[in-house]
Image: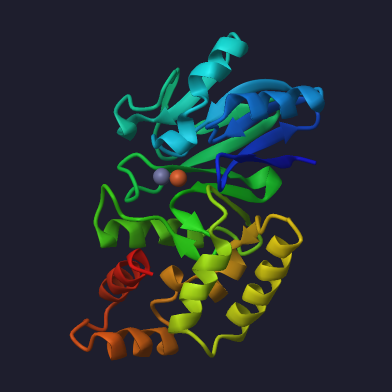
Length: 258
Ligand code: ZN
Ligand code: FE
């Protein structure tokens, strides 16, 4: 199995990205090193890289402990995070490559939640790690950018192949879907996903991964072109201009208070 979720804190996910050929692995977004190191050991893997999506504590809090436990470990991080990634060894920009054994991941710059937020896309695994930019049926708060920055970042992710599996930073799916349904109560894909997510959680399972194709059908932050969503937003606030950035910004503002 090439991607293994390791729950962290109350609702975060770290992910082991495994190169089966070499037994090497990387970890995306580690806040609790012990849990990650236990999983690495249990599976007989060798940890070679840390891949943080952004500088927030719940995504990098384990870095220092990982480096102490694994000498020589590479810790990547976006140059645009301006040194805020603990134990960072390698600065990367949009388009850079990261390597885990024979696997190559591509860095995609997706600012807005933070200035240097990045995704890691592994074409070989048909998978993207989206941190706090794209959640299943949601997106992160816009802390260090503007609405249009987040719209552009989400569009970059949405441009990946529909089959791409989406591994995000938090288990927020059920709440996100509840919010999405307030804006698109007639969206059948959304209703189906909500029923599925509730039953998965009730059974103690994770709702990751989603896919880019799925997100286009259910994620309100990718659906500014949905007539039902636009009508819902403009019913709540008729002053919102009927353009994608304004619709996104209002959707985000509503979710902030949901
Ligand atoms: Zn964050
Ligand atoms: Fe987070």
